[in-house]
Length: 536
Image (cartoon, rainbow, N blue to C red; front, top):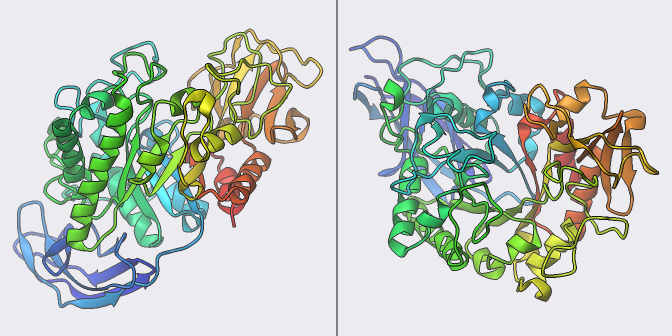
């Protein structure tokens, strides 16, 4: 196998994009399907093509890179001639990010290419890839091809052993849906979403990709993984080995994809989405205990320690983030000041405060920005406050004694969340204000893409013509929007509401704004582009 030639480097802040002329393998046929990228003896990244962005490098630091071709059969080339590059200052400005759902490639046909064509990727700093699961026996990170029972909240074992290695790194992308227009070769060590996200970073070098573990369906075993120092170390090291060092397992469902360092350099950090430490309010069957409060802090400390140790050894800084609860009753079970010392930032899930699980209503906003005297919802025990975003932010930063919340989380590390989906009720009378705060008879109808009563993506409402004109309403007290049509009430964030939340985040010194998730947006990428513009 011949060595790669013509290696060049382009610096963008703390990322370096490398390009080269590929190897040829005279003992086989065709070009080498993959490349290792080194800085000295440190393996920094792998690539399935002839370019890659090495991200999360240290600012104002000199690096020397070489590239080596390899293939699935173990053939390897000599290393290329070296190229040197010195990084600049870290990118500035607010954190703007969005979740990319692993499963969005199926019914929604939402691929990383859609992010690229939206035009928003260049305005985002982070994409959070969701979700990976925790092994029910070993309590470590793992990969599998096994469907979850994710639409059945009453199933206590809905996520046990579930995973989607096929979507992650086995699916062969064709040129029409790939980021760079090329089709995957069958012999590539990794394909799927992982390789497409790598291609996306090559197009937008300032973009970082963070891997999220947990979520609503996959939080069952966090309590077990965090329970002891030994279990925390085993869990954290397994996740770093698999997703940061990139040692993906092979042979899952008979597929040869994966292998040592096959995903090296792809992920720029880890996101912990534990829903919720110490609380019975998570998915049915979730394990929890009072010890979760301290163990959650210790788990984040273990991630910070191990990410820093590995990052320091190769000249990188890895992000550690967390999806944080927004309800006072759930914030009371964590330690805001203590966890903030380990996190680069916290994504607050400032949504899902109300929805059709409140079967008979009254209708209400799923993410009111401010309190309203007209809000008929009960106060959150044991205090006297209702759910709203402003109360959440104050609880994290200043504390709230009536809930035992001590605060102390720096505002500059908090990132405010907005949903790209709407919660809905049916059987809602118009009342005096287009269905707001009125009784209901049940959840809104099942939709084409979301396939769940009581929820509708923005794009589904756009397709029904419900997002413009007389069906859209605005409440200046809560700075929130809603949609009312023929007895159906939807609550979520229109462009006006997203703009208001960006203005609030700026005025209150928050670190940024994020969305859950890309696939809910319309074909014009209305919401993600509004989010990018909402914080200057």
